[in-house]
Image (cartoon, rainbow, N blue to C red; front, top):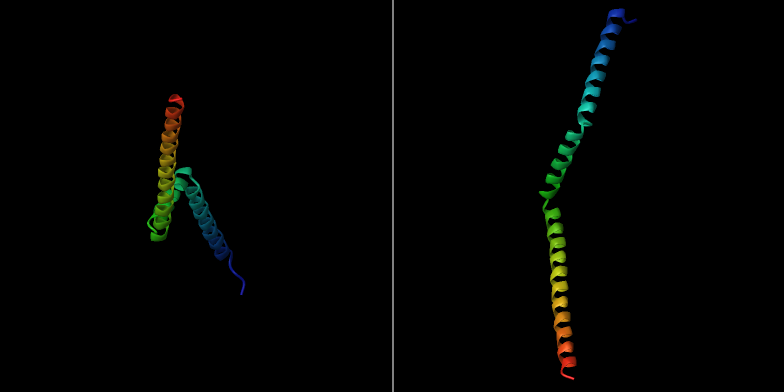
Amino acid sequence: MARSIDDIQRDIERTRRQLASTLDELADRSRPQNLVDDAKRGASEKLQDPTVQKILAGIGAVVIGGIVLAVVRSRKKNKDLKEIQRLLSQR
């Protein structure tokens, strides 16, 4: 059975409304502030994950350990240099 012109026009109008709605949604999603908000929300969700928290804690511990090791080595080196200077000054 052939469709009537009125049915075809209604389908075209419905399709236009759907397309306009889709374009509006895409425009809204692509706004920079919305992209930033989505990124923040995604990062917050990731930070709530216990696995990610454990990984970040491990990385933090390694960084702090490295800093402590560097400070200890620096102090030892300074102490050794002072001892060498003291010995050389006694000559």
